[in-house]
Image (cartoon, rainbow, N blue to C red; front, top):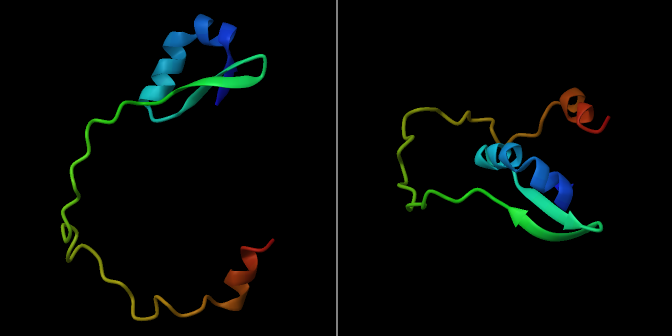
Length: 76
């Protein structure tokens, strides 16, 4: 989302609520972006591999082409 400086000053609390939900807000002056509000990360830890093991099974036909009628629905 992009807003001008006046809007950002007037609605800062609302914009910060949106940022807290993960949205990025660009603040522009005369239509030129000058700043970006982004959420502060909580500090990421390396992901542990294998934590979902056994939660799902990949079907044997996973890599097979989709049926033509289903494939064509993506191009409409």
